[in-house]
Length: 396
Ligand SMILES: [Mg+2]
Image (tube, rainbow, N blue to C red):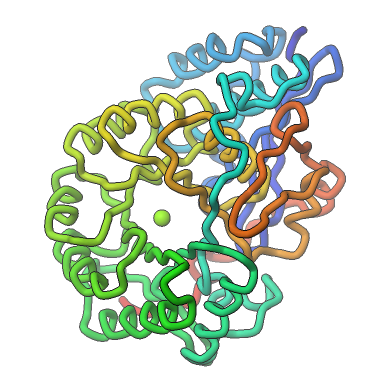
């Protein structure tokens, strides 16, 4: 079998593009991957895919590891970022081809599955309803009463865990986004109200996580970590490129700390895991690729650290992340966005099965579903104005 074409497809995801990789072969088997970027560099990934294409066309798609390392060596001076995303999307599509050709699932290629049901959490719970209620087709979050109703919905729909951001209900609702990295008392009170309302609404049987993203520095993250101890969180999540600063936060907090979603390859995870700077390592499978993510999970495992995939894209990413979850021993839980644009589920040829807070691992060969290309091509990505202006944010 030979690769005949490699292509990136950009699809409108509402407020951002979803990026899919399609790899074609001379035997008619097509593999799909996803490596959606967080809003601002889709054409960077597109360009990297074009740069890598001459290396791939004419090659045997079964040689997944060989091709991965060839792509890696070729681009090594540009480690991480959009380059690794492009490599990852291609690598995932190659695994999809190989699994389909052999008539097995992707996780079976990795000796799995270890598990065929994967616990998931409702991510960006309230965040998208605050920022994009029209796009996700939800009622606006006008008050804490609306947050309480959302919490009741999480329970009613069977989820056993949720993750939210610094959502501030109002007319319109907003999220806190700090440019200067400083925590204010107003921010603290707002977080307390949000988490207190969610906790009262969901009771003690649903786990809650809060994601602060890159907003604050160590001092602010410590202040919030101490503040949220009263809510007994599943984890407090934050992004930080310095393992010592992260360890400082972890050591100061009694709440488990989750981080790592913006790291690439074992090389970038190693200092964080060596330092035991996180309680839960977040790994973006769509950005690292399936093999590299499994290597990161193995590194985390020998440091007694569980992993949780970062997954806030289309459900093709949910599927590829699910096969990672099925193949690693140290899984915590899988992220899933429940609120999205209404056409997201139409982009897959098979529906996802999520029931009672668990995703059933699909059994069809490959990733378990194909990209519905007709639906993808119906909705090409058109760059929006200023991506930051799409958000309603509070703070400097
Ligand atoms: Mg995060």
